[in-house]
Length: 339
Image 1 (cartoon, rainbow, N blue to C red):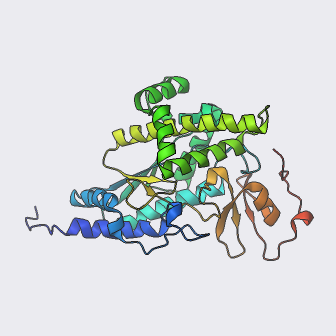
Image 2 (spheres, helix red, strand yellow):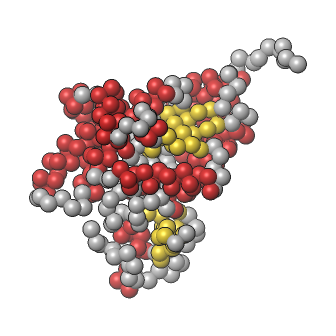
Image 3 (cartoon, one colour):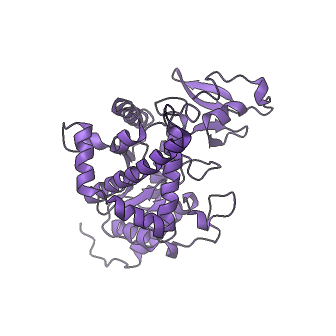
């Protein structure tokens, strides 16, 4: 029987605020908003600081529909063996995906239609710019899907470039995406000069490209110049991917693994604790502290502090013992310092 009772106009905002309060403790704040050494806001946060997100959430509530969240992330593992354990997802991705699924489950407790998060895996989008072969990216994304199925993470899904434009090659898909959606380099250069957030993103991507260039034949200065050029290409493709996602999911709440300011249309989300605000599971390795807390570090650093743990026959993470031996006394089974 149809319920003809009038709806409380304040209800969507109240439920949207409750959902936003579930997200706020995990926000990845912009550097200007963080206390030294912490990835948290320097000032107490209020839902009024995030009007864009509150409006999006209230619309889902008003329509009595599941909340849809999109997260461009989980591209592929870094090619630098000093940072990661291998090419496939490991403990870092497993814990991060489980966290995101729990977050969606928590939303369902305050909004019965629930929530669904689409992991928009972007490795193919800039594979040629980061030096990772497309087959490695296929294997990484396939294992993400396998983890989601195996661990029954029913609120998560994966979308990648293989889901776009049928059977075309990755090269053709990248060219199409770039031509249709990417901003011009001149526009990006102007933004880097004038916008602090774009400058920080450019510097962060340049740093990652430099760290991951494991077989560059030239000089250090030549590598720096090349990475600065490629960084613009990565930002172009990243924005193109974001535009495509927004085109396909225009009402979704957009999450980001990069730090975001209050009031931004994107909401920065922190997956795991790390001393570096830019650290992600695909650029680092998990070290389980003696109290059980996972921490993201470069693999070489985690190897000096912990013991290697295997899962399903593959290196998974490190476990720090309560009385850790000095680094010089503990051999690294994967060869600390190799590059």
